[in-house]
Image 1 (tube, one colour):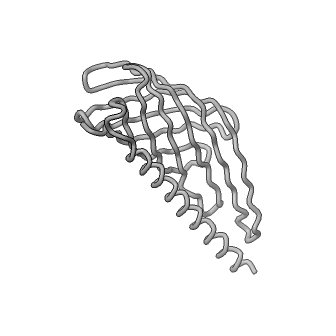
Image 2 (cartoon, rainbow, N blue to C red):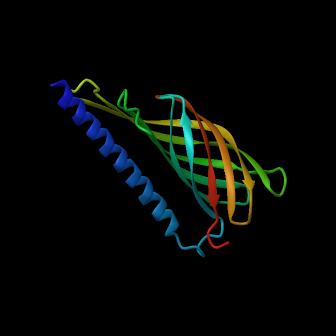
Image 3 (cartoon, helix red, strand yellow):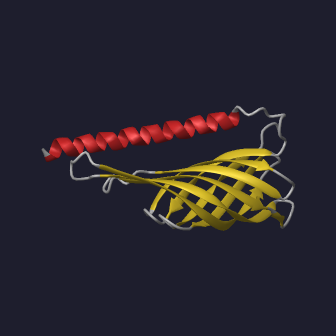
Length: 181
């Protein structure tokens, strides 16, 4: 029956969203548990993003590890909000390098380059229990900026293009916190 299959797919989508949010919470908890005195150049934060492949927003979590004063390694996780009318998700985990250029004491801009692992999931929205799932690893490049509001709190904005399979432009805004400051 169409109604039961549709209800089952909606339930599966809700379960997938709950699992994605739980995964994001676990990742943020791990970042918070890092020993604060071990690395003075650690920052962590979260934000919202918009990706052009599915034309929908999502949640982003990231950490920043200072390798030098200018060079920063940034792992991030982007979890898209499921599109309930199409049953599609595009989530990603990335690792990028930022080269920070200080404009003023409060403003920093940076180019970025790295790689992104994407997970594409498409539910059959017609009541069948078929699911299409695919992974891709692609290069990405872009630019961003930081605004220092205090010694421990920063706001960031970033624009990056993810090349290859499921290529898209991703814009992200969010906040970063520096532990122990």
